[in-house]
Image (cartoon, rainbow, N blue to C red; front, side, top):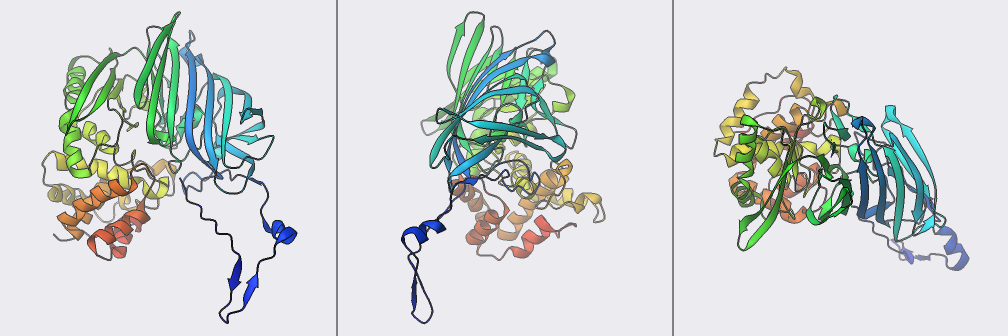
Length: 488
């Protein structure tokens, strides 16, 4: 999702008025860059070997057939991914996609229907997993790459010990991908700075359900299997793609958002969720209109094409909730605070995503932590002042700045959630309620469907408030110590 501006210079006029003409003909042609190798990085500060450059993905069409084995850990995927992209600079003689193969093998790659040469690179220590494609003819403008692959998919274990990517459950599999696990399921440009639309086809044995993002547009039985088609029409980062396969109780409804607007709900709950956990889950799933309506009053129009949840019993190292776009994931049950947290992410994190993991995650996690206190009618100033006050200035939790995380093991820590929420409350006090709530809505209206972080937030906050906020952002976002609490 980047802008390139190319201006063909015809002449350079010097200060004294002398015009120096640019050579024409063969001399000019020599200055035109030839085909290049696309960068094998998106430039992320925390994951420098993840993501790619030279192109902008427009659409993913995924065709996945999952077949369980007696040992579910040996279950297989037979898959095809079609990636439609635009070359964004010089023609590409090669380009790369992120793909952590595990036990899968790529059998063919075509570019615009023509066979292409390809190699795979796997360096787990550097978190570098690439499918490098060399098309028969350099690509320029729009091009389509089709990758066919099959085998046993893997999972990705993060530096903090949690598991993402393709994880086996006791009756199927769950594909969760924040921050970089999506490369275990399909080749992609694995950066939230490059969003695309999706069609996700999942073929599973009859008796199992297949949940994913967006809108369920088709479902067909064939023999002893069922084919599901999910369509995500809004731009979505690869880390927000979700697939969950298993036995579920499925509920659907129409959620009224007021003003003749509504969205469809599809929710999937594991039958193993029983007792108090089941009752708590059902209570939250009955709050869609209340919660989405309340958040719309703060942030503006709901950005999704549908809503819903997946509640599944999963291994303990996948025991986290996640804001997968339109249809958030919850392990084993849903509580009220987490329900609002993940719903807030549909605006903050999904509609507007962090362009850099180490510098921008706190924007979204902080807001999703702050919003439940506001929506519940609590005194947000007292709540977050107390949170700030009870951590002494010498505590190690202040030593990781929200906007300069240097170790991926620390990514989902205090600085993203608790200090992030304190940042938002401190900003409210610094610029006042009127400008603060104008900022929240303007951020969503301006950047809906894109990826924007600290620099754009500071600039917009200054535009809205008329305040110079450089010192505030340095104190709260970049400094590795306890920030000063502003007065009301």
